[in-house]
Image: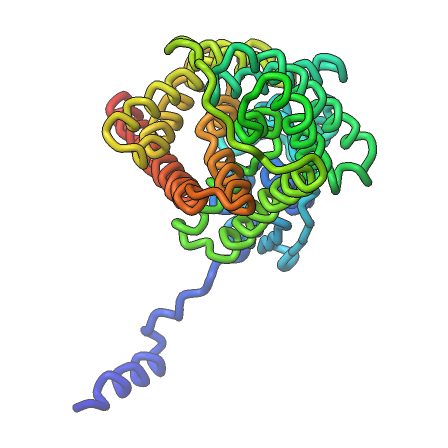
Length: 433
């Protein structure tokens, strides 16, 4: 009896009544520009700071919208591998990411292009030309405004982290100095490699030899605001997101890179302290009122506009998301300090999505990235590591707080993004059914 099915199949085959085995459909004909576009698009998305999971989703969605039925992608923080099955055979390509970084104006234009490629029929040759124009687009503002923007950014973070009236001119001067070094780094590649060490060394030297004797403030509290643009807060957060999304290789490599950036800054701080003297603790100065951090957020948004080239008309929306994230962070801190980063990150994605849906709102990435800087897990890490090498008693606790903050922000981002996607799906279902 066990042989009956095979006997039946042989009889049916002999009679010609057995259905033929299923044959995979032939791959469709796709544009020769598709694979080069996916390669260039993937590297641009990596340079914008997106996680590898998001990049893979975008590339596969664009490929299927363009007619490809079988698409394979392998995305790492340093490169993109793309494989597409076509009528003429399998086409594969690879490109390494430039690791140059994109400003907010470029990120906004790139996000808009990806959305069009995912939802409409765009000629791929035109899309490639537009993508190249976006990557090569110069900053919106010149050198002077970019450097001044970094000074405003430093003052803003100083008001958020250590709102002391007599330190505001110090924050501005140090911020402009570091901004000038960053601008020189874009013109002088040799300096760019060692720029975190040089900037941390110079700021530490001035904090110990000038600021402390002059004003008597704690040098360590002066260090973070001028160096905030070097802090890998978003890198560490994206690394945690990738690790929790089972992207082990990408998350681990990005985590190592973020820690290396922190160690470069700490090396500069230690070298500066070795030359100028120890980071002597000082009594805390009288701080400004409750309003100071809120004014600082306005300065952060304005400084971001000039330093990071925010798109035209995006400043009010960036400020809205910054204020919402900071308010949520304060609410989370009232419940429990470790929840501050989680609650702050939880509201960023829904707020950014709501802003994006307004008639003149910028893409969500434009308002999300400045808000991540405001959550400053990198600042906690720098303080903890610097305190550790100087033998501070609270160093281990500060580092532990930084680790908890990074993963709290990552979890809040994941939950907030998931809630936003589900809410959008439900809304579309209700209004289209």
